[in-house]
Image (cartoon, rainbow over all chains, first blue to last red):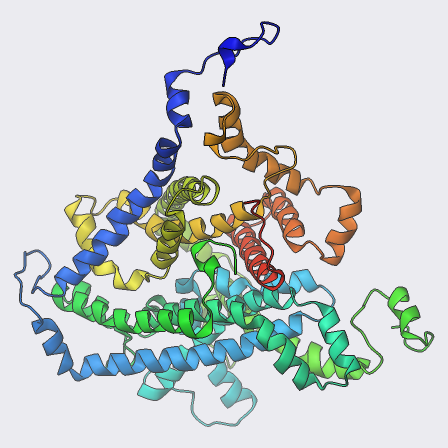
Length: 318
Length: 295
């Protein structure tokens, strides 16, 4: 601080240049650090969100400016059976797939938490379905579900002789829906399993030892030790999983494109079809906006009901 | 393994490397409850990849005739499909575009999220936790409700039909996530004993030194972490007492090994180790109520 009054035997520090001094000014430094991230997010996230809300209230089409039409788009959608079918399938898809992913993922995590040979190798290869881009695994499933060359049909008809006809995976309503749910579960298991495994590994073995001494059963150990201690991670992983399953687009669009008979449209694929392919930007935006209440509901549920954690905002826990 | 020869649990726990194996945990039981389901999981999770790999090396004749050829095996492997892809389609061009977009978008997002996370976690200003919460919420905004307005925005900015459109929109989804992860990362670095003075630039010290603290320390500390600390801590690492440290070390070895790996796989693994580290840390802290901040 008092450089001037210091004795001469310390070598005088070179006075930093104006640029260095500017960057040492804390508010300026904070501003500069936040500028790129917040700038990007404002222009490409906040602004489009607002624009989406606005578009949903207009009759904009591709290539032409629209005018404000109030809630007309939503009123039209309320009477559109296809929209309601998409809402139904989104909820069904999210519900069943999330249940499947978490049941199987938790099981896999419990298995991997054991001492098995090649533990790290196993963990690495199990992640493959999650690391590989969704479109690629969707193509793999599309080929696996092929009406004529499906390997499952070959196994059932020609090897096991339990069916006389090939499976009809994608060309009727309910089989197509279940096939998509299965593909989604397949893709989601690794993420759930690895996240929960990370949670499992933080549980101290001494708790299990104590429970064993008290004569607990395996189920009691799971119910009263594993499950409660896993709850915080379970809550956050479930929020993410629900949100990203509900708004899934790639898997459905790559495998069925919403067919057969528009029965496998999720809200996201329907929004894309109406907005981009069909050119009705306003209507597509309205469908996208209609997803927001569901997402807010899921987020609030996880925030208030499952776990309210300060670390969600980057703070330490209470 | 040595179930017959050892009698008391203490002896066995020293003699074998499988501490969680107990006497009631017989080999058959483990086989049925662990190895069998695990093997099923691995088969189901990997089968589509095997199927794609087999498909890409099979000649068309085999591909369309399951009666004559066993579909699970390749009769006469061929590179014909790959040749077609590389020399008769625009695939090299697409690959180039993909790479450019990936490298630019990743660089841009990492640059901005490292700075933002540093500001939020280390520079600690009033309201920084609200910015943190905002970033977490931004991560929860799914891409599929944004694509229609994003397309419009890109059109308005005149970026339509250029790689720049993708390079600038991907960070929208990458920045919140990586900032959120990095906030956790910066938090996990202790305010080191080597540098007892607080990092607050307002706390004094000369300019250049401060900048060294501000910009270099996280890096230096990371190298310290990666270097594996001291030999006596290695043992702890091995038994997993310090999962985050082990993880960081593994990140490093992964980074070294990636010459031989597919870059994407390595990146994915690296990223996952980060994620795992973060989640572990979160759970750990929650249980212990530890707060690394000296405040």
